[in-house]
Each structure stands twice: as C-alpha cells, then as structure tokens.
Amino acid sequence: MNQFRCPICGQEFNCSQESMPGGYYLINCKSFNFSFIIGNELLEDEMSNETRGKAFSLIAEHLLHKRIYQDRNTQDIRWRFIYNPSYSINDNDPPNYINIAERINSFPMTAIDAANRALINLATLFPLYGTDFCVRKQERRLLYDISDWDNPTIGILTLLVEMGLLQHTVSYDQFHITAKGWERIDLLLHKEKEINQGFVAMAFKDETNSIREAFRKAVTSAGYAVIIMDEFEHNNQIVPEMFYEIEISKFVLVDVTFPNYGAYYEAGYAHALKKEVIVCCRESEYTANYPHFDIAQRPIIIWKDENDLVERIKKRIKATVT
Ligand SMILES: [Zn+2]
Image 1: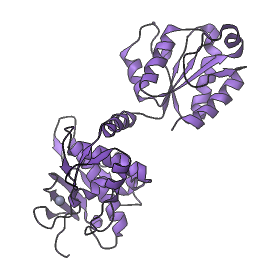
Image 2 (image 1 turned 60 degrees about the vertical axis):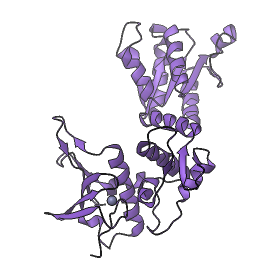
Image 3 (image 1 turned 180 degrees about the vertical axis):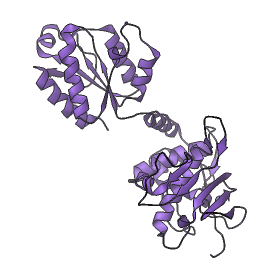
Image 4 (image 1 turned 135 degrees about the horizontal axis):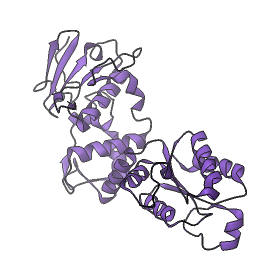
C-alpha cells in the first residue's frame, strides 16, 4: 500500500492505521477524534473511488453523531464497519457491527438532501451560534463531497450560501450558519424522529366506530402504521404518550363529525409541530354546521360515506405526506 492517507479526513500525518487480526484495520482519525475499525475491503483498490467516498462519508456521518457504541452496561465499544453487498447484518452479529453496503443507498440522492445533511453536520461540529468557522478539506466527507481529495472546490458550501443557510463572513473562507440555517436545522432534527406512522384524533364512542375503522383502513393501505389512542387509554386525559406518538407521526387525521375537544387539542399540537393535519367531516354535519368547522388552513375532506372517506384520505396522504 502507498503512503497512508486517512480515509476520513485525507491527512497523511497525525491520523493512523493499525492492522488487526481477521482482516481489519483500526483507524484513528485525529482531525475528528474518531477511533473505529474497518474491514480491509474498504481500503482495497477494487473498490471504486465513488463507492469508497460514499462509504466513508456515511461512516464519518455515523461517527460524528454516535462516536462509540454504548451497550446496556454503558461499556464503550468501537464501531466496526464492513462492506459486503451480499451480506445482511443479523442478530448473530455483535451490535457494534455495521455493513455499510446495506446503507450505501442512504447517501444523499439530491443536492438539497446533501445540503440539509451537510448543514446538520456543520452544526454538530460548530454548535455555538454566531461562530465563524473555516471549512477545510478535512471536512469533505461530512459535506458528502466524493470528488478527489486535491479538488479545492466544495460546491455544497456554495449551494448552502445560495440557499441562505450559510453566510460568508468578511474573510472569504469563513462561514457562519444564518438564522434561516438554524431554523432549518430545528425542522430537520424534528423530522428525524418521525417514523412511518399516522395518528388518529377523534371522538371515540359507538357512533364513531365506523369512522375509526375507515381511518384504520385508509392509513394502513397507504403504507403507514396507525396509532389510535383509545386503544391504549380509556380515560379522557391527555397523556404524555399521546404527545410522544404525535411527535413521531408523519401526519394526524382528525374527524370533526362528532366535535371533540381532545381531538382539536391533538390536531392543534400536531399543527404547531408543522405536521400534516388532515381534517375530515361527514357532509351532512358539515353542511348543517359550517363555518364552525373552520379549524385548519387546508381544505377539509367532506365525505359522503365511509368508502368515500377511505379513498379520499388515501389520495390526500399520497399527495401531501412525504
Ligand atoms: Zn483523519
């Protein structure tokens, strides 16, 4: 092998690599204080530069946010990364093993995705707002730049400046995160918690059973898990679990055919978290009581019967939930 060049930061000195038994290397990247283990396939010449670039970007991103694997006994263990496209990590593997080949498709697909994730990484490296920082080529992996180490241009920074998320300071090679940038970070970090789940907010009584079942059918056939809180809680209290379930849901469905303060409260909470809130009402009640139902900016789904409701919700989820 040629002279060592750190696969994370590109430095030829300071960082180090030690051979380990079983075809592994222990890498110590001094630029970021990362210490981790990789399979030697990640350094071999057969791997294309593009794949290697993506793999080490994902490794650097992982280590930046989770330096060490911590098990239940709070023992710290180094992460171990392998690259094997024909293998899936399973329960028999130690929990600190990661097959980067299984995650390679999570490398940013679009420029905007790369910009958003690069912004999160920069905020993690430079967490104090108002700080001016220099971005060196050592940070290239964390900016999802897979071009050659000697290439001086880091296009993603220009993109971040053009998006108004970063600003050049007086000295041209320094940057800081703008107010808009911090707002974006807040939004992104919130989104990260979300799972493929929809939350149902409505009055629960015998007359509403068919609406509840229509909601369940619509959400599950749109490919999401459904959370219906009365299946957990039978009293009318707003419980911490409910807040949590709304926070991790991608959208909230609320039916106002039978008015219910709890459902409005839940919909309001979701709205404040910038979730998609889909408001539904049966046509007969809507016509009789309008404009009492004016609780959302978005058009209400006014449904005729439960079959109509299922189809309309499925369409709305497809159109608005990402
Ligand atoms: Zn390094």
